[in-house]
Image (cartoon, rainbow, N blue to C red; front, side, top):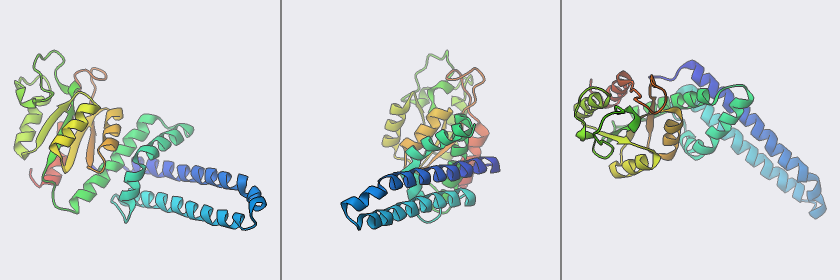
Length: 254
């Protein structure tokens, strides 16, 4: 369940490059108007220089905390705040930096989710075990020819065994947690609002999983990528062993 060294290394490398690029941009934005400030007031260059130093120090401190959290595999002081604040823009930046370095978007997303999962587990293990857990599944895991509607009532499943829903219902009953199936981001957000979970264990493709982690902050999400033997969005599969392992680890129940 832990994040692999290669994923950590990728995220750390992208963070370092992103920090260098942002520092360079910040310096460029400062240098261009710097010489004109003196024409307005002789003290303006010093004031602008002080502001630049503060902004650069804040930028470097933020990235240093994020890198420390990735290296240690747990939150460090203030890193959770920085992580929440930068979740949307930072990932977009890392994907852009990855493209410049020849790293695919999919690889960056997998590394991001892996690091996120490790930080989520570390954070939850340091507190009381979550009381309300939500298993959130995509609709595409349901057998594509099944006539039963389970989006709003997963217990309607006939447990025929043609898709993972029957096994997920057993997991739900064993651990006493919530299980929901969503057809898209809007329905998923509605389910989260209604159930108000302490933890979400979500299965989805790269795009939906990453956006789900971002949209549900500060609720922690442990993300698991689905399996697509028939291509995207049709009769996808769930790594059930990983789902069970995560729940057993966090809920102290085999």
